[in-house]
Length: 228
Image (tube, rainbow, N blue to C red; front, side, top):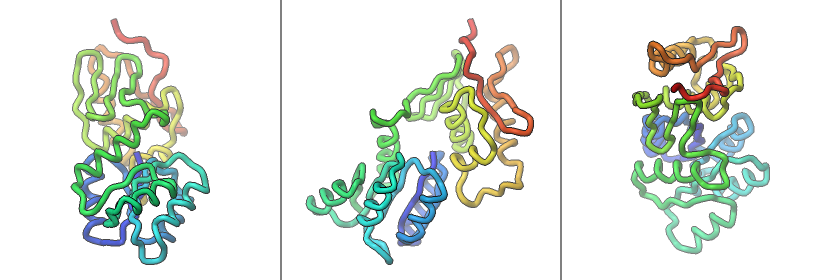
């Protein structure tokens, strides 16, 4: 899942960005309204964490512009304005949730995950492909009765693959969802993570799940029946 963090406080932005990445999110951080609108034109974000007090515009205006463009990104407003009227104004502008500063980083992550689990989002909590399951809330993976431990980045890659079973995903598409804007397209880091996932997901005697489509990308099989 990819998050756009819009925060002009450098210390807070660094802390939030680091924590979100530790929790398995790909994060792009910007410090102005102009940069937020520019990045949202380039990338398809799942969640936007939006500060209201920006140096070049009010976050409410940014929120309205994002909504006017359409798209499915959830918007979580974060601000020191704790009056009820301010919260109502933010929600009326199109925000999905509101978090008052100062906030605990754990609560921020919990709010982001809650937004991704809302019923009108086609984002199920538990993903299944054959006998492989992935709980997106706890980040636990199982294949049959076998539990699989995943790093934050492995989880991000596997989650994107499992949300698109049977679909060939290019390295560029995977990087857009599981990495941030600092991803080097000339590196082989995605191949490395796919290899790691194969070793963890495909124990001896188990059916292969991950396929390499030469010259195109990767996919996770969509038509597997659970092993009996």
